[in-house]
Length: 218
Image 1: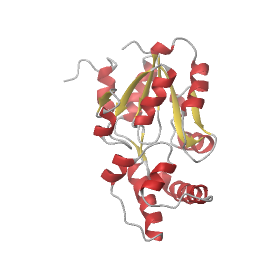
Image 2: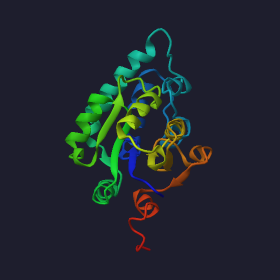
Image 3: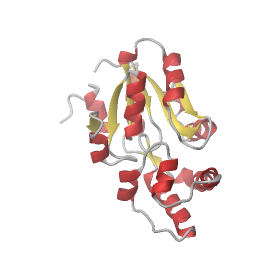
């Protein structure tokens, strides 16, 4: 692959946070007497806009309830986000890519200030040229600010790669006219990802090999 810049999704792709999202969601379900979900069910049904996920699991999202629940959710997530770690091999790969001269950015549905602080607190700022987060907490779509990020990166879109973990990441890459790889360790299960037609890889080591960084390894 001829790549000069990688756009990473954050939640689920670099950050291993599916377990926390499921736990927070189950707390909210329990408060309403609704049945819990497991990670497989969550990964089968998670999508953008996130309001549709709430509706699927039985929440009332009318009359401002979705907005109220979004604040409850994000407050519970933020209080425990420090327990989340990067997926195995992620920071090592970020360092390899930087050493190889590739640019890197993050495009995330996470609110901008929260993204900024988490990346900084985890000591990862050195790896990224740009951090592009959402302006709110409602996780509708990343396409519009993805376009703004791509304009900042500049150059040919053909040499930019999106690495994500959801169908929406593929939709964003398609809208931006850039290449896409999806990882199967995040918020969507592999059968969902396969429907996109994108290349699907299991982990960070596989990405390194795909980009030619570890060709000598078995």
